Image (cartoon, rainbow, N blue to C red; front, top):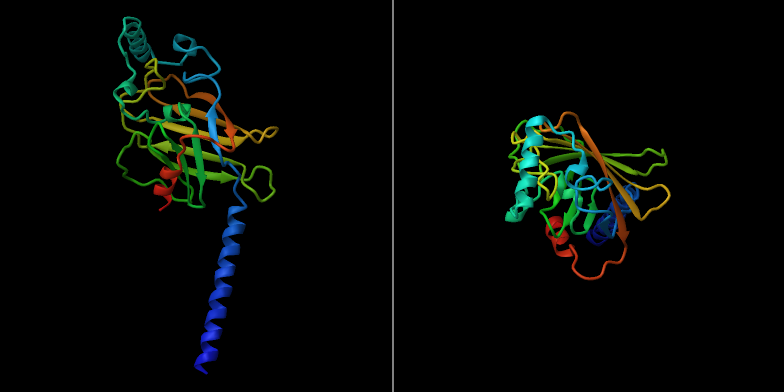
Length: 242
């Protein structure tokens, strides 16, 4: 009798394990394939579709336009201006998404990670949580995302993200294009693959900040390298997932 009970328990465990594996595979199939490394298209200025410096036509308030002008004048004289990155401080959001070095995106059911060799990783919670009342501010902020199936085919194709609880100093780019010192920045993103080219990724980024007269939306584009050669973020990914 004990022998038969052991066989029954083993069979039940195997069946449960197979069921769980099938459930995980089915769950993973809902998410898009964003594997590989994503390489920036365009320059490192905040809006890659426009020239750098004043050519960005940033919608700054008069106070922060004056700060920007001072930063540019200092850089013209050989200084660093308002660019906080030269001290090796983290770029922070939203500048992280300029992707000075390639990005890697790791999608899990409860969180999505955006990794880079240039800055600390981003963690985007997608488990349906509400905004916490208190969070320790960070350069990357605190991000909550939501996956969307816009095609209605049972597979997600867009992630919408909101990032809050940021600390500074931060800026948009190497010219010292400023963000407000109150660090009340809110960043909203829509990330998705190009419908005509699965190796082209778009990130529509809207920054809401008191240094700006209105929300400022730019689009960052990335091309996929499916089989990257050389330095990669595998070690960082292993650390995050362990």
